[in-house]
Length: 324
Image (cartoon, rainbow, N blue to C red):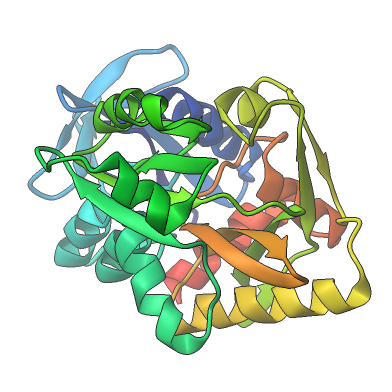
């Protein structure tokens, strides 16, 4: 009997449009002979199933079911394609775990931890994971630009603590620009992390649980046409994403080892994609994504393809691992 799969997409953050694209690719890719796939749009004002005719049917949040033509449909598994809140920060994970519905992402706590850049980096540091020097600011704090510069130097990066796709991030070269960068970041989150600039090769490493084995995918080198790997570089083609990365065997082995360790220490499941910059030959972790982009142009599917894993195999494996 075919399994009913809900593909959740959309979300509450600035990343919702990217999420809709990822979810649509999953929907189009899944083998319809094996699965009954349902597109579920999750927004603050509505949760709806959207059929091929673009008709909408409300989701019953009490049990995550839908009523279509007088038939009540339940789901065997949820494929999580929501980037940002509430799909990447633990809310949806907790909801599905309460309902005892299998889902393709990591657990509630792990999602909340990895989505919070400050907490994630702080958790990993005792395990020897190298990171940039950081300074934390909360909305309403008195801002001491001199203290910030003394800690992280210039240039530096000002980032929303809980946001993705480079929303709420600025590269700051001058003391006078710190306040404006904080204003940009506070539009996305009330917590900000300010990090030292790491000048080196940037790479992205996908790690997945593939057929029961933690698997590190081929490494991607990021070469942005812009000042850093911002939204336009990620999604509007203003970058080169080179897989496999043009790094030495020693560097590749180091970053593979670190990425796998991060996955294991954080007790992750399903997909993950972590970003690193090499400084003095050592990979320094920037962040961990647990619901990475899943379009044909996205980094993780590119890496899977390089490893000989098709998109259909990638998505099907995520579902089958979740159902175990």
